[in-house]
Image (cartoon, rainbow, N blue to C red; front, side, top):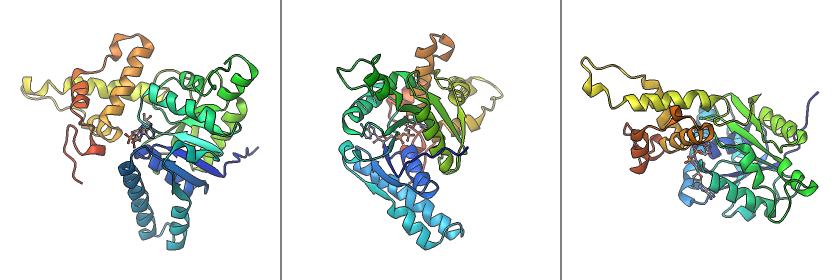
Length: 294
Ligand code: NAD
């Protein structure tokens, strides 16, 4: 049986690496109208530049005609406040990996959006159940019918980086998520050309619970080569991957694993913390363990 997602207009909050990728695949594959919001004008510009570059590349490679590319681009519009998302059928949040930030956004959505709109977070690691609780309007009991319905429309929907390339999406139900929300969010991700796997709401879900501890251990080892003779070669792929994800995001995920499991084996590496303290996030802002151009 094919389940209809019923989404005509999608809101995307956060126009960073993930939000701009989600906006593009939604307009390109699912063919929905996309309304994009970011608190930073610079990030909106960067996000739209990324979308334009990929569309030009698709035309160059003969995967799209110029007309198709123009139609796809015209499906994406920008608004400068959350209020501009008032009429969307679904929203995917892709702001920085911070629980207070995400809770604040979904608390605003509980007032702004239509009661039948689906809410999804692209978080890499944070408890979906904790974010869902913020979707219950203030003063409403989370255990009553209204509260259960409000949180029931929320789910985790975790796209991978880079979104246009990576096939997998993790669908993570909160304790509160309704079956209808799950079915529709899954159908939407499939319409975006993705394969969907359902995961439990545990820190890091499946992919990051496996990947991030490797990255963290490799960063722990980065201090060592100078003291070893001959130097050991470190698994460079993990460092490259960490810098594509964003060292700030890696640290936030590692902290969620550490705090969510009470297990000291997940303690974030001090070097990772210092890189983030210095504001060196990797590819997205030009400096991490490597330097990036442009
Ligand atoms: P990013 O740093 O590239 O982008 C985050 C964006 O959020 C920025 O443009 C920032 O201006 C915006 N933002 C922050 N606060 C905001 C607010 N209050 N309102 C509107 N916009 C706001 O980060 P990213 O890599 O795109 O990650 C976004 C989310 O996706 C995070 O939750 C992250 O864990 C998750 N994620 C990241 C990856 C990855 O590989 N980077 C993969 C999967 C999921």
